[in-house]
Image (cartoon, rainbow, N blue to C red; front, side, top):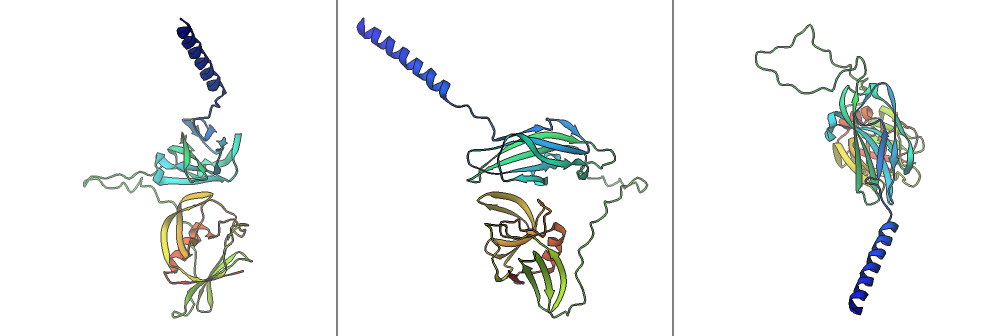
Length: 287
C-alpha cells in the first residue's frame, strides 16, 4: 500500500511540474513578420501604405517584393529595411499605378544572420482605371490574325542612354570610378563617351581603389552577404573578387555612398555600360 501511494504522489508531482514548465514556456509567433495592411485579397488603387512587422532573434534585414501574377520569377522590388520592426508600422508607401492590373502577391521576406529567411505572402488585386492588365502569352491559331483596328500599341520605350560616337575607333575602352565625386566615366581613348553619378560603398563597406579588369558579366546575378540577399541584380560586371559594377533597382540615392562596396548605377545606365564594355575592360577606381 505504501509503495502504491508513493507512486501516486510521484506521478501527481510530475504532472504538476509538467504544467508549470508548460505555463512558463514562451509562445512564439508562427512567422518572423506579418503584413497587416493591405488585407488579404484587398483590391488596391492609387497610392497604398503597406504596414507590418519584421523581427527575429538574429535579424539581418527585411525585403518587400511584389510577385506579378504570383510568379516568383516576376518579383519586383518594393522596399528594404535594415532594422527590425517589432510593432506594426509603415513599411513603405507604394504607388500601385506603376504596376499592371491583375492578381498579384505581396511577399515580405525576413532574413536571418545565417541567411535563412521566413516569407509571408498576401494576395492582392491591383485595379487602377485605364491601366493595362499583366501581359500573358497567348498562342494564336494559324487562321487568326491581329485586328489592326483594336491592336494595342506597345508602351513607349524608356529614354535611351547615349554614348558619344566621335571617339577614336582604336581608342582603348576603360572605366573610371571616382569615389570622392561619386562619379563614373566611360572612356574611349582620351575621350569621355559617357558620364553619370553612382553610389559606392557606405561607411563600413569601402569600395577599394586600384586598377582592375572586368572578368565576369551576368545579365542578372543573385548577390548575398552577411546582411543582404538580393535577387536579380541587373547588368552585373565583376572586376575585383565580389566587387562589381551593376544596376540597382532598390534605391534612387545615386550620388551618395549606400552600397556594400559595389558601384551602383541606374538600371538603364548599367545596361548601356554592360553592352559597351567587355571582359577585360580596364576599371580604374580612385579616391
